[in-house]
Length: 316
Image (cartoon, rainbow, N blue to C red; front, side, top):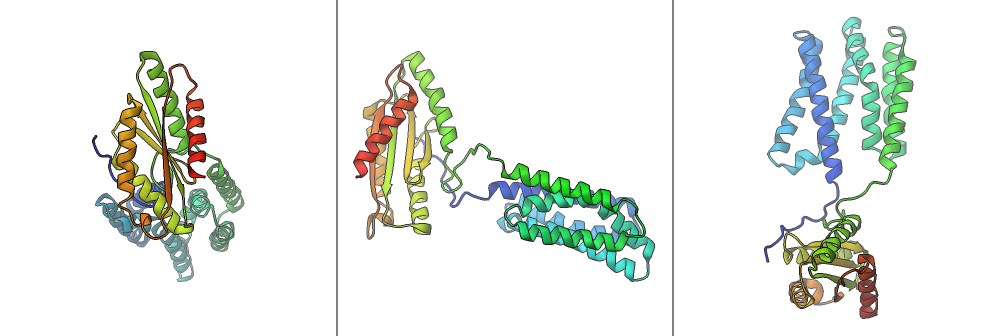
């Protein structure tokens, strides 16, 4: 059987990374356009100072540097603060016109900034409130007498922040388990329904393998053992096979076009791989497995439930 690629642990944070990089690219494009529009004024140099670090971070991201991806969000926050401080500094440094021009541009960016902070700090409501409050106080202080639409922009920004926070809290179908990187239970159920329909139509064999851990650890140590188990399973599967982290201590494996006898060989091979890990020594976790074949015409969820019942009896 061909080996599957090894999993990285933990797999969480991919969505945050992609979102931060997308926001960084968007800020670079906007700041670059403003720099070109205002060139060669002193204000354009402020935008140029923002663009260069963002460009370097994007290049590092393309080169595969994880440090750039992990700090993209912080770079965006710093860029926003630099623009706010620069607008205030220019204003109170004696050049009211240039300071107002820069701050007015920031005012029109305010809804985008509010949406960004609402997404980035969606788990920190107090921090979000302080950031947004400080941002709008600075702009109001700068533009109270120079711009007549501060209130409208403030309302629009608050609405954008509330909309993003509401969208971020909506449950979404996960494609991957955030701990192990294996397909999610929702994806596994969909694949099971699809493969079982093909097996019933063409009379192909279909087998499920279940693994259940009775761990003697908790917290980070348990997470590490679960990831080791997931890696051992993924290394033994074919491209057509599907494995998932079904529940807290249960893994399921779907083997299309595989009879029970062949599935037992696969299951025992995975158990041999598991024995190479440290948790089979001191404070080992008991691992039980069961193999069950899907019967033609049977509801695939009934097959899955029967497998779970067998695992429950095996681990007691």
